[in-house]
Image 1 (tube, rainbow, N blue to C red):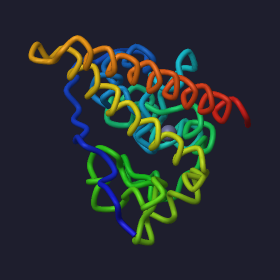
Image 2: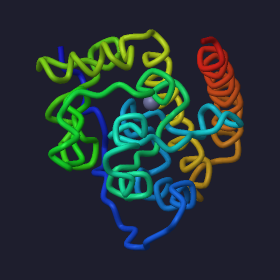
Image 3: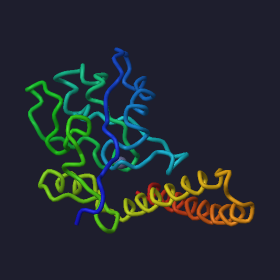
Length: 205
Ligand SMILES: [Zn+2]
């Protein structure tokens, strides 16, 4: 059952630079992908200091003897979390000889609207009611419970932001502020706990 949209923004490619090494695009990808994984939408700050990487949408193994320009073609690069990077690796379905940036196993996170394919279900998990969505969920193992924890951490982070804002309210009495500060400490603790748990899930191969 659909509970919420999959993401709250659209990924847009804003970098027009032509760089020699694909790795040099990392800071541009980071910005264009809103510091989130192209496929699972995990926010990179939640798993720090673990690092996100660059994924070749059409994998290097597939294009290496056919079209080397795909190595540093910005349109073939995605910003990804360590889990998706590992699971996707060289998985590919399509015809590389068509010279298109296409990979039938994974809907293109920039060109396709993920909110039309994926959603968060009532447990916070990543879900889809379409065949192509389910295919990607299976390929990247997005059915793992860790994505429910990501969702929970997102909710806690939102509460944290609201509390912080409320504490700054000048009309609030000192006693009320103190109560909110106490609540914020507990929420902070819980958020940190969830992020630690996530990191453990991420480190566990
Ligand atoms: Zn991911």
